[in-house]
Image 1 (spheres, rainbow, N blue to C red):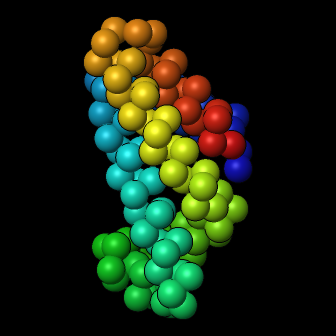
Image 2 (cartoon, rainbow, N blue to C red; image 1 turned 180 degrees about the horizontal axis):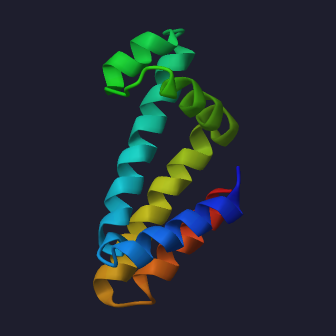
Length: 111
């Protein structure tokens, strides 16, 4: 919801640990997978604590923010995010574009 903040944090992370640009796709894919699972669980009327326990999200109150975000994104957008991450991974491994810029474009596309 705050693309400028996401990009600022991303740039800070890359500046402090340049190798993070190569791990970011995996981190983001894990987040998207959890988000998809959380959305399914919410639609199954599971409460926040049960979702946090199932997805190993601690502290459990962090799941509330996750649920707000995934509701805004929706299932279709999360599926597209998975496709985008696969494409970014392919580009990064093929030397197409700058890995940091590829991830930054993904972050902006999710806002």
